[in-house]
Length: 318
Ligand SMILES: [Zn+2]
Ligand SMILES: [Zn+2]
Image (cartoon, rainbow, N blue to C red; front, side, top):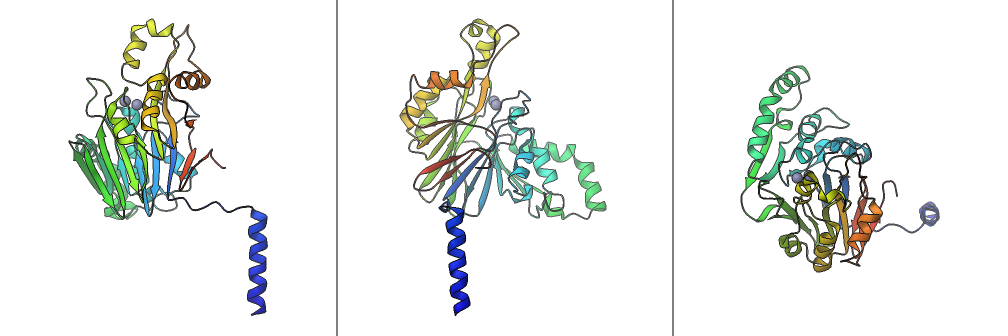
């Protein structure tokens, strides 16, 4: 009895020394990559991890997504499903790495069930072609390393209209069409719901009412943004790119109407050329503030958001 009491005292002292406990979040979002195709070392390709209950869901797998999962100590094979927003290479180029490295032996692999990929029309073709491209690697490792065949199998699902595309253990994912330009179809965003909370990802889009519709009241609304200095916008190349993306002022209009608990920028596109430098992140914030005065975070790789009664923001390691 005395020893139990002593242990309890020791435990409470330890807890007191550790400071106030962080409540276990209902949902957690981690930005794995926040960039555009530009191969920046500090911002990897677009990818987002959403954790809810026992589910770990990934949205897009751009360059380096596996490295970010490794930094989080999440085994690659532990991802339950990967959702694709659209087929621009910067959103899918990390898929073969996630799929095949995730099949390898622990500690980083461990997948023993099929790799589950869900996307608008095109996901099945993409995965079937990757299976062809990597057929020899798969054959070699099955024979040589005796890896489980189920772990490299693919379960790919296409959808062609808005609505629920995934439902498991109380987690629901809804896909909605966005507007990434006339030639870039299909393009979707996603809303993830769990226990009365929600996370919404715009995908790549210009200003779009559907993001407001599905993003309204979200705990976290992650939106893409593109920005260029006014001098650069006279250039046809910059105009074409900006016609596919959302300016800070327009993203602010989306946030002002959807009123998320926290608005977050990811897929941060800062245009420049040899003469005209890229705008700064402070410029992006200032322009957003012309139309939106609520909570706003410029996303960084590995920044996370813990969702409960409130939403807390954590730069990596804090
Ligand atoms: Zn993109
Ligand atoms: Zn795109």
